Image (cartoon, rainbow, N blue to C red; front, side, top):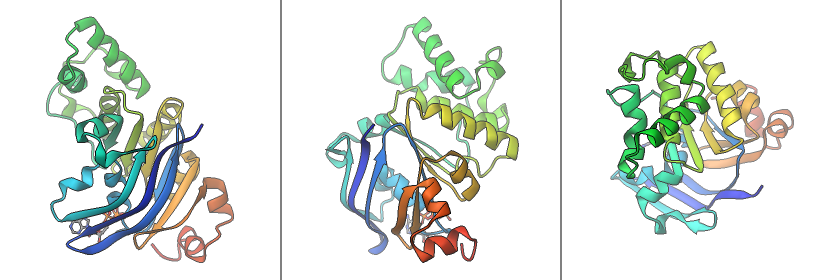
Length: 249
Ligand SMILES: Nc1ncnc2c1ncn2[C@@H]1O[C@H](COP(=O)(O)OP(=O)(O)OP(=O)(O)O)[C@@H](O)[C@H]1O
């Protein structure tokens, strides 16, 4: 499997202050890539750049290229980019509607009307997110009544309804307890059979448990990027070593 997403000299600034500096990274298809680094180093800015969300910040400026299967995403329609590269945030963000309505929102927007087809999509994606059995008899329940972990799984299921190729997750477990975190990790590993996953995490053990590759960002630069095992067991850079040993961060 090859590279699905690649950045070339990606540089992002807010109010002319450089936050990301010349990021060059190749993300492998159908793998999990973790982004780690101390608070404020630019992790969220980085993944928000990957589906052009960062352009919504009015004080941002973006330089360099982001290539999705070789195509510059800034030359693609923004909506199409976000269809192909979905995003899930730190705090679960279900719409204050029923589980059913959360799940059909995007498919209906994209023109699917057939009830049976919608039912099929809902079941398939809720199953992928490991939520179907828990909610199948309560699809009319308000999504905000679900537990935090269920809400987050719903948001992941909802993100999958538009058939993205890549799923970006920004600290998806930081508001969850150990059990819900374990559920999500297990699900992400399964999802990586079908989807490419990029996950920002503060939790180094989480990166070790689930990521094939890990990138360590510090001060807006990629200090080290490689196979997760290699990066944690044999870091090449002193900063990486200090960060994973907990000396700073
Ligand atoms: N819209 C904005 N305008 C100005 N500065 C911003 C904006 N968004 C982020 N920043 C700044 O950019 C830097 C990087 O922020 P970012 O959220 O990408 O870091 P992070 O590594 O994800 O941090 P954390 O782990 O705390 O979430 C921070 O100093 C932050 O204050």
